[in-house]
Image 1: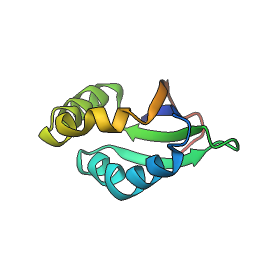
Image 2: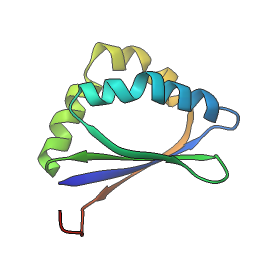
Image 3: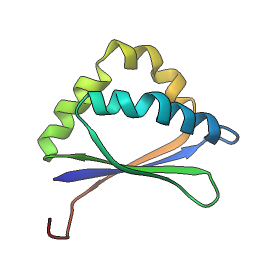
Image 4: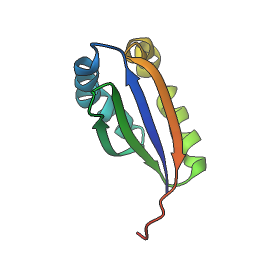
Length: 99
């Protein structure tokens, strides 16, 4: 298993809208594509949205992301979705605890 630690700095005043969008729409679209979301968090200052997506292996990341980002839905909504983000950081992570 591998994961992506995804840290999004959300534009000022947009966190409430972002959380609504994520919880009511995005999470379902991401799950439909075959990605798994292990957890989602907001930092204490409510400026950063942090979540972890998991995949079976590194090769699967490219395959599943291509499927998700290639959908008509994503292409029609990407500008609106990313308009919430001031910055995105994506870090590849691997588990170290026994499963």
